[in-house]
Length: 149
Image 1 (tube, rainbow, N blue to C red):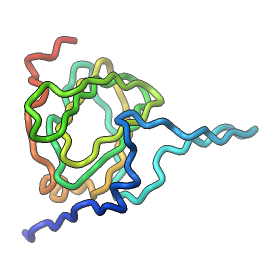
Image 2 (cartoon, helix red, strand yellow; image 1 turned 60 degrees about the horizontal axis):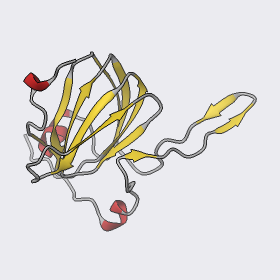
Image 3 (cartoon, rainbow, N blue to C red; image 1 turned 180 degrees about the vertical axis):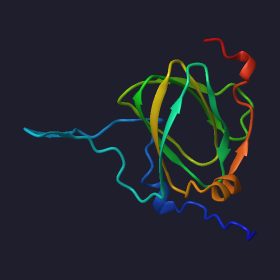
Image 4 (cartoon, rainbow, N blue to C red; image 1 turned 30 degrees about the vertical axis):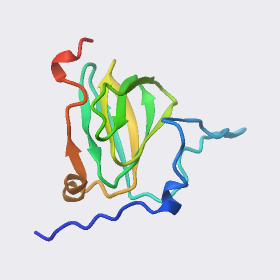
């Protein structure tokens, strides 16, 4: 198997990233047919739909070069995050339906699902397993035994 080459984000790319974790959505375009809600308009390589059961724990990792936007369709997520290398508990935010949040590279993050949840993840890198595994480093920001839902 060949070595996976991952490129660091450029300064130009970093300039397009949101400044806050929760991303304020642009106003939807609405007419008689319905609405179009802009979510993300930057170059990316993956889009996945994820469902999670109440009490499930996902992530508990950081990405070396990848970033992702997550848009919650239904349910709710307790999102934990901190800069990689920080040993404190980090911050926790509750994210619900219709909200978009952003995780840049080198940010430890975990998701605890407060109810059955469906969300879309839009990412910089390919989601092919070998690419994903070359970029991700697992950590334990949230301990499974500490989840009480």
